[in-house]
Amino acid sequence: MNVLGIETSCDETGVALYDPARGLLAERLYSQVRLHADYGGVVPELASRDHIRRLLPLTREACTEAGLALRDLDAVAYTEGPGLAGALLVGASIGRALAYALGVPAIGIHHLEGHLLSPLLGESRPQFPFIALLVSGGHTQLMRVGAVGDYELLGDTLDDAAGEAFDKTAQLLGLGYPGGPALAALAEQGTPGRLSLPRPMLAQLEKTGDLDFSFSGLKTAVLTLSRQAPLDAQRRADLAAEFEAAVVEVLTAKCLAALGQTGLSQLVVAGGVGANRRLRATLTAAVAKRGGEVFFPPPALCTDNGAMIAHAGALRLAAGTTAPSGLGFGVRPRWALDALSRPVLADA
Ligand code: KG4
Ligand code: ZN
Image 1 (cartoon, rainbow, N blue to C red):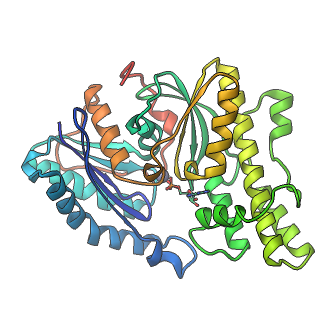
Image 2 (image 1 turned 90 degrees about the vertical axis):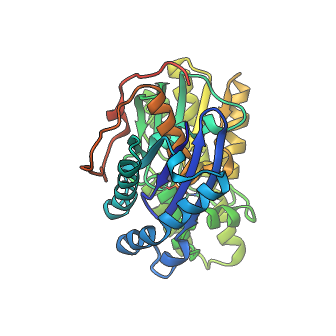
Image 3 (image 1 turned 90 degrees about the horizontal axis):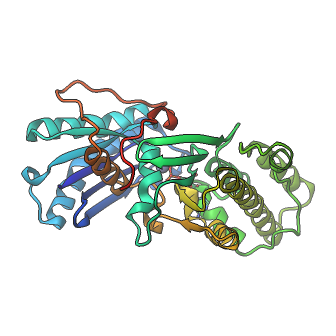
């Protein structure tokens, strides 16, 4: 079954062809980072227009690489939400029109479900049930995943998402957009602990087992420290290192607690911040110490991409989720992942 996956929820146009029997057949990704860099963040209207320019040429390229013609497609999966409304509409309208013309099903996918299931595209794969840590620019959530479509929210951020905290702190340190990878690179030149930042919500975890997160105070604490003394190169790097260490320590403690509270042993990490090297190393060591295992998507599939959407679409269709027919469609810019919770498949 050849599934075309389309991702246009934010500033990346992603396209991929996936066949459950043969795996990933071809993938194309166009990042709009340079388009938005001058503005310090994503400009929604520019994002939508660029998705329109890129989507069909990328789809043609992916089909050529996979040796497939459009008529060889068996289904089209596209990101239905959450994300920027205009950007989502580009993928949804092109995906549904293409499927309608080809007479194949078109299925709208939840962007976070795409991230969540993407470790199943890796070489070593988790088995249901598992705990998932979703850490992206817009979300920081801990989920208990029982099956495809069975998602129980255990913890959420009360304010900024982890990726958002990375991006805003990077901006405070003058690193520009996108900040996460730049801040992580700067952190490698510094030493955590030389400056001291709080570990938000760790006290609540110890007292009540609370699995929620809060990262906005961390950004304010960085601002305060950055004003206390001249920010020379070493102090900037130390501040970046301490910030990264604080985020990683909180995420790690909450993941361990989620595993402990549910009695599960497998942890899946998904979303852009999952590319962070310190997070990967710390989580892997901490979970191994208690006899569990951590699964990350292949690094290239941590940030937004079409492969995770094609893959989630294939799993959904295999599980019997029906794709609406006809040309009418909508997108869901705001869409809670646990609203999807309806067990449809025990194992993938
Ligand atoms: O999942 P994603 O590509 O897009 C969303 O759906 O949000 O995640 C993007 C987020 C951004 O906030 C970016 O700064 C962050 O992931 N990010 C990182 C790293 N790479 C990407 N944060 C920390 N360390 C990284 N290496
Ligand atoms: Zn994402």
